[in-house]
Length: 119
Image (tube, rainbow, N blue to C red):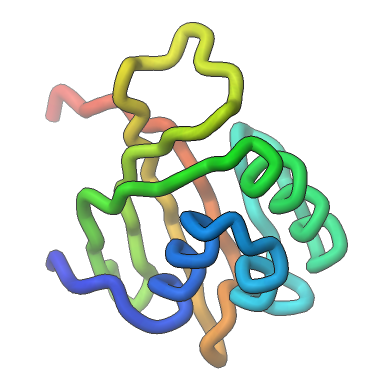
């Protein structure tokens, strides 16, 4: 089911695109975890460090292409751009973001560069 981007996830992506560290971090729960590029980042202190260096520091932007509500978890497919190392990446990098939200805070975020399935 495709849906519109709303709530804390909409706030999160707007804050990412505004390079606003405090606003991004405010979208996460204290005990949130992020899995980005096969790395687990646990707790709000570590999440803040990741946001400062790899999101805001690298001037990452997200252009949302698709939003899917999957039994309450939200999948956001977005084209990423920024000042990060783009070696061996496609001209348009579209990644899937798997969000779990409780009490209007992100409790988990998994960011994956997926390949299309043959199925």
